Length: 217
Image (cartoon, rainbow, N blue to C red; front, side):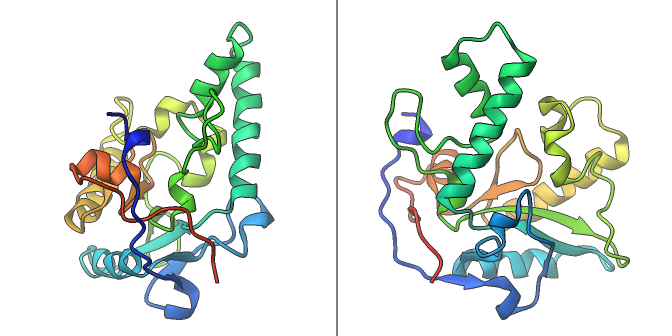
C-alpha cells in the first residue's frame, strides 16, 4: 500500500493560530503573499508537540515555524510552478515524468491519473520548521528552507552526502528532536515534518491518518 492509499478518518481536532497561542517563533509568509492567512495555523496537538521540541533544544536556539497550513489555491500554484521548473530542466521528460518529478518536492493537488490527492500541508499536520540562533538567524543547514527553488533538489534531502559536518549535524539534531515528539521527516526535505497525515501514518505504521483536509476558521 502506498501512502496515498492510507485511509483517512479525521479526528476533528481544531486548528490553532501559532501567532495567537504564542511560545514559538514564526517567520514571514513563505513563498507568496497568498500564504499569509494560513501559514501560522496547525492542529492543536501539532502545536503542543512543537512546544516540547522547543523546550528540548540547546540553550540559545529556537524553533521557528516556516509554514503550517497551506490553502488549496497556493498548493496548486506552487505545484504548477514546480512543474514548469522541471519541464525546463528536463526538456525530454514526458508530461507524466514532469508530474512525478515535481511531486517529489511539492505534493500535487491531483494525481496524474486525475484522482484527488490530500497534500500534507492541507491537513494542518505537516510543518516546515527551522532552528534560529539568538540573533534570529537560521543556523547552518547548508541552506534555508526558502532556498529550495534555488538549489539542486538533492541538496534538500535530510542526509545529503555533500553536507558540511556542521550542516549535517544540525539537520540530524532537528530530525532527532522532532522524531522524539512523534513527527516523521520527509527525507527529501530536511525542514518538512508530518504528524497525523497520510505520510505520517505510512511511515509510522499507523492504520489510518487522523488528519484530513481542513480550512482555517
